Length: 78
Image (cartoon, rainbow, N blue to C red; front, side, top):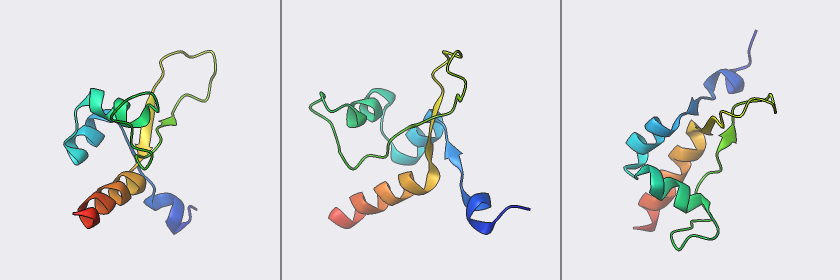
């Protein structure tokens, strides 16, 4: 039986993050890259979805709650 906290967690894939934020794929990755001029320290960190180190697909996702929180912070800043 799962706890309410764990059942409420959802991982969003890139397409869903694009839809939620309105940002382009390249902008999302720029926001996460400290070397980019568009770097945003507050942008949520992607989670690696492949636990197997030999699998090189590089699948990542973002916690829905962290994306929602980031959007709320942007709204509050304006």
